[in-house]
Length: 177
Image (cartoon, one colour):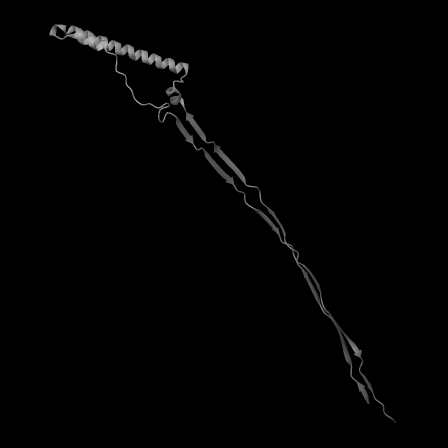
């Protein structure tokens, strides 16, 4: 008797998994900010009117006003003097020698005021400075970020197992008769 066992054969192929991940698509947009500037310029003012008047460099209109004012003041002073002299003459009966005192007063030259003066006078030039103003405002805009994720690419190849009969079983019986 002769026997052989059956043998099983097995072929396997491994499964394969491939994953590919692409980068996400991203877009970034930054709108420009807006800058608004409001400005009032600085201003320097120099007024030399008083300095020019001190040097007798007046305009015709100003000189006319000054002469008219001086004339008016002299007329008022003369009216006051004549009124006072008239009042003194009215008091002659009281023994007051008005004519003699008026003659003395009118015969003497008027006293002159003398003093050191500077032309132009101190602080006659007026300087005024306005520094101005600057306002800066910003309109800042937000950043726009858009992200689109990409799905992974997955390739799967399943493994395979083939089972087959590599050798058949056999049984041989020999007997002799």
